[in-house]
Length: 259
Image 1: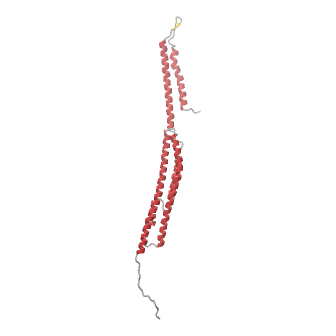
Image 2 (image 1 turned 45 degrees about the vertical axis):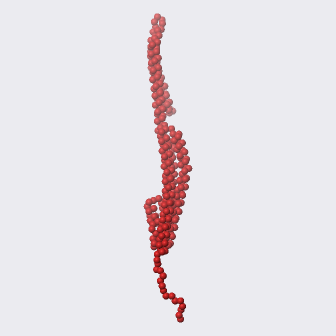
Image 3 (image 1 turned 90 degrees about the vertical axis):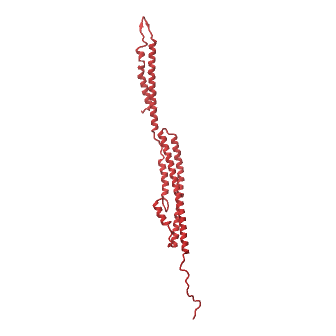
């Protein structure tokens, strides 16, 4: 059967007291007040008896001090064990799942992803300068492609918003659990670990906010790009309309036949 630290120290203290008791009482037993027999009477020495009692009291006090010291050391060991106890709760897996869902929504961006290379190529192909030689059918097709990209970016932003809102319930549950763990912490290590997990929860919420701002910013940027390209396309079409052509060429006309 495993004994607790306090039980072991208490047993040691009782053993020390039992061993020290004969030492404390030995002066009394060895020399009981220096009694001696003379003429049929017992002579009592009060000073020697008082000295023996004082010695026994001092010895008992030393034993009590040793017992108190052992108890203090036992309590110190218990406190150290509590301070080194690890927190029996971890929110890391749930927070990683929340971040993974938001990141997956960002990776599902339509047409133009959150990639520098793809963005540069897409702007060069769809939002570059409009050629004067482009046919009307090509201009219409390019305008529709830009409109579809803009609408897709708005849909992506709404999906990210929905994902962030969906994480609110899980974040609330994790926050409640972590606060409870922090308040019920038995030692410094558990309190520190609970605080670190609360900071991790805040970091996950900040990542959701960054994802939301990125999705909204992407949608707004594509809207502005579409407007700028549409204005450029309108300028090109107006220039093509106003460009002088061959004009009117006079010719011979026959109104009546002459037979």
